[in-house]
Length: 247
Image 1 (cartoon, helix red, strand yellow):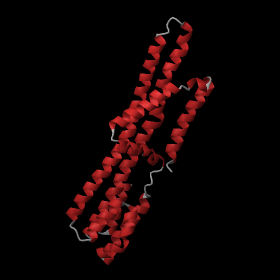
Image 2: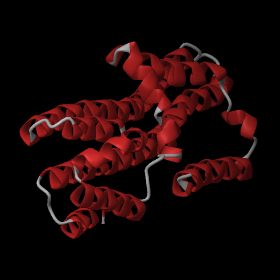
Image 3: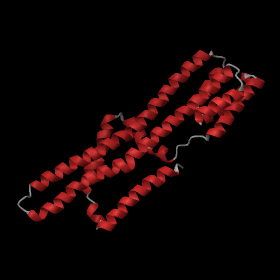
Image 4: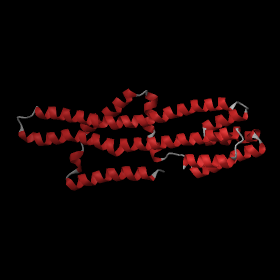
């Protein structure tokens, strides 16, 4: 569990709720039409910007910000070093028995190790690795972009809701007593948009980008391992490279 994500988002929402409670009635900040235009509009416009499959995957990607599921870098470094060490001592074909374990660690790693064990040339393996890495990067980028779009569009629809509220308020200028409440309701949509963007969407998108970059580094470590095994490099040299990469 990524505790900083939980603490940061919960604390931000809690501070806002406490401030609202200290300043008056919290119910004054609840407005269903404003929620519909801000939340519904933001999600709808973001959906229009992405294919449905990528949009759903991107929204679900919020779980990665709370639980990335990435391996411990020290443990991974030792594991990959041991794999290279076994290959150097017993030969590449000895790794055949561990192929299922490689796939459990990472699908790309499993695919590359399968190619290596099958005797394919290093250049072919590296070409396949580049293609697989590009696909993963595109998928991870889309996840980030969905939340960046939500962060842009929630405030935009909040402003649209405010303008709609102001227009409705101006239609009642003959009733001065309605101007104050009308202005308050009109401003709530802007508040909703700002809170959703700055407390939720922007932090989530930044955390997803951080984990995206980290995951790509792990993929690079797998590629380095396959290359080191293919070239019969010293496992200690591989350990140093991976430690530097993930350090």
